[in-house]
Image (cartoon, rainbow, N blue to C red; front, side, top):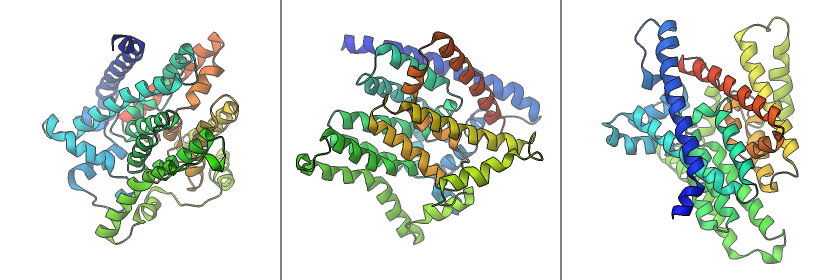
Length: 368
């Protein structure tokens, strides 16, 4: 037990330093800059629970009230409601506590899954780059990202350890947390076949347990059918968030984003937001291509589906935030940064932009 603790000692220390630093940074960002932009009294907890966080907390308090809220899957709000009594019924504190807990669990499983393929130094680099990534602050606010990433990395880890029931249960929870959870069913099937060397004769009855991966979204659809009469309302509600399904990825990139580089858009906030989304997609594609042959094919498949799913919705509104869901890519970042000078550049570059984006988020400006 002592040896196991020592093996995770560095990870625990990194988490505590990171979490404390984020807390101090957000406090001063809210009360210094937030108070300057808004002369009225600012609320620290509400700043950390803005945008989507407000919907999660609203659902936790009052249930689904508006059509657009059905786009937010129920498991994370349910957890917020469950833990709120421990924080004097403060739903904001409950959400922030959960995000911190799941962020810590992410790092533990990040190390566990990394140990299956990578050296200790590579894992440490990957952890640092993951935490410093420009949108990693979403792990600390009232968003479901930390919960989903924990479920995804834990599910993939247990699939690697041949514990298919546990992997499927975690994937099921993920599919009740975010729409992205549904891709874990396909990813687990892929990993199962990989472990069987893609030979049909080696497939056993245990593959059937992977169907459990769909039970989370299945239960949500059942709930929607009973309450609003439409099991697919979570899809139609996406229109409220400018999303439409079954668009061609090339059409999304060309028509929606390359067009923003017209001269009349340069210098506007519209240009900056859409340029950020386009750069995030192109950066993702470049790193994904670089990862081929360096990452396990299952991880490549997982990241590819993470890329294609938002590209099929006709808009990349939140893609910079979705980038962190592709946690395996950060092992590629670690491999890419073998040059110490480039490693330091990447770390500082990420950290500076995280500070900028987090400050904007805390002061009420949409980022991703």
